[in-house]
Image (cartoon, rainbow, N blue to C red):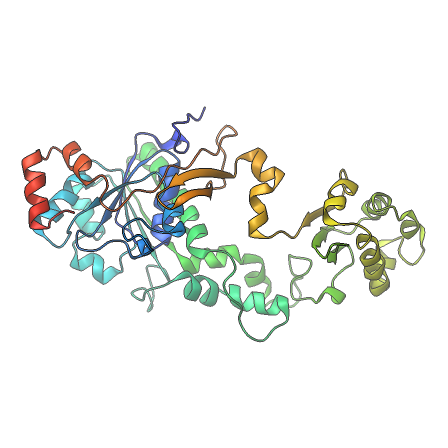
Length: 407
């Protein structure tokens, strides 16, 4: 049974993660692990801070920082100084996971590459994130989700094809966030492997790899003409899509997405009954799957007329119990009021330095519980406490602060 402590779900209680990553992808993975109960120590430079903290309150961080750094402890250490490297070594000695987003050349120059960290703790799980993967000619190039996940990963191109436009749109979704969630799962798998075999693994995550998994049906089918798309509307205009897998405007100008994964005459009759249009089910022109395919424009027009009789709020009642799959096309601002989001606890109110924020949980429930996010730490908030835990006396901590080794 998952136990609550007011800051996540404690399924990883007892594990320690040293998180030296910056920006979003690596911190997202660390935030998931912290939400699941691991003691995640965010290590930032003593002269500066994670660039994602930039906001109107330097050192506090905006909504992106608050979301992906939940429930962590934060220390500020100069890893270029010998004393700072000694502090990191003490952390590594007592950790289960080392997490970094540094490029290979930076890892080597800072002596935090795999061999360096394993020399201190041979049993540590070493997790690193890259843009394009750990091998190949572009392995040393930086990556950001807008360029690598959305652009190079084929998602922008797929969005252009689906929308029938010839220029890319802005990024939809957040590649760093979903990639971090995937990496957190890989880290957990590596911890399980270590528990079963004693072997410590290196876990590599990349934005390009996550994009391929995320966009797999389109990638697989793209160069094999005989394969149909896995998604009903992919690459099709509304008028060219099946009537039973299409979008429809409501009386109040909203939209719904209707999906018959495989067309079904039983589902069609049931939908027509719910919409108060039984005559559509009886019409020879529309009664069968074959007829609706032959008369697609008429079938679409019939459903356009039927859905236009109702507001979106009315449809939620009218379609209650319908066998077909349908969903409202919602705005991000509406998610907090979604009854399913509320019932499952997918958004949780969390007090942060920039106000009360509705933070999503990491999409997984343990014994029905998704946990409550803890707030993200301020810059260097836990430096003294963590160093004290490592055995540093107060006078040495003060001396390190005076010399700039810590902040």
